[in-house]
Amino acid sequence: MIWGLGFFRAMGVTMRNMFRPAITVQYPDERLVIPERARWALVHKFDESGRPKCTACMICERECPDDIIHLTVSGDAASGKHIDEYRYELGACMMCGLCVAACPFDAIEMSHEYELATPDPHALVRILLHDVDAASGKRAKADAPATQAALAADAAPDAARGESDHA
Ligand code: SF4
Ligand code: SF4
Image 1 (cartoon, protein in one colour):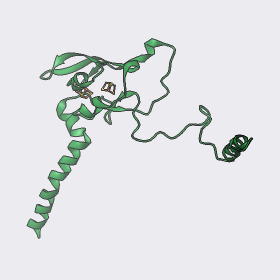
Image 2 (cartoon, helix red, strand yellow; image 1 turned 45 degrees about the horizontal axis):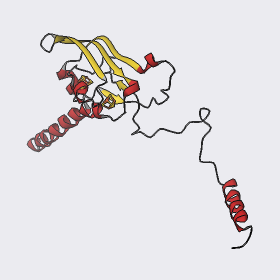
Image 3 (tube, protein in one colour; image 1 turned 180 degrees about the horizontal axis):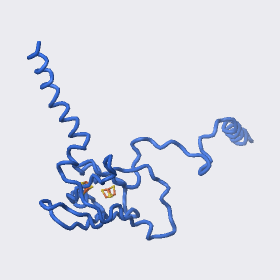
Image 4 (cartoon, rainbow, N blue to C red; image 1 turned 90 degrees about the horizontal axis):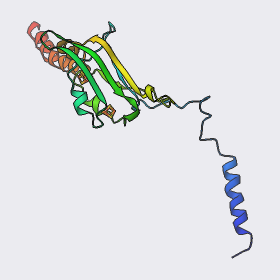
């Protein structure tokens, strides 16, 4: 082994890296663009009138593997449900997205809010909805993109039939 070879190898690595472009950013002055599929804090979705799309069906509460979604609901489906409180324990959320996938009304989503560190433990429990009427299942279903896509697909053959009838 040649004496001093290791030193020159190390210097070679140093020189190579010295002229490489930086792969880090100066956070928080600079921020990377968050990918669309990123999953961070859970939030509710609202219709065009600002009403929550949540129907208080409780499916997300049942599906959450961490048991950190808690709904307090009054009323019933016949007379209309009222959401007294929709509580979400952000600090215990593993951002798996199972609640979003399970929601049949497209009423919640994982936001891109990622700067969640806080010295206040109370801030890690969020009341996402408070004292609001739940959406009716019928309206929320009609608003859901999957339902709209299905309705459009249903309407397409009818429209084609109508055109051929008029031809
Ligand atoms: S509508 Fe969606 S967000 Fe509301 S309780 Fe049902 S599953 Fe949860
Ligand atoms: S993202 Fe996962 S852990 Fe967090 S509330 Fe939804 S189901 Fe629960």
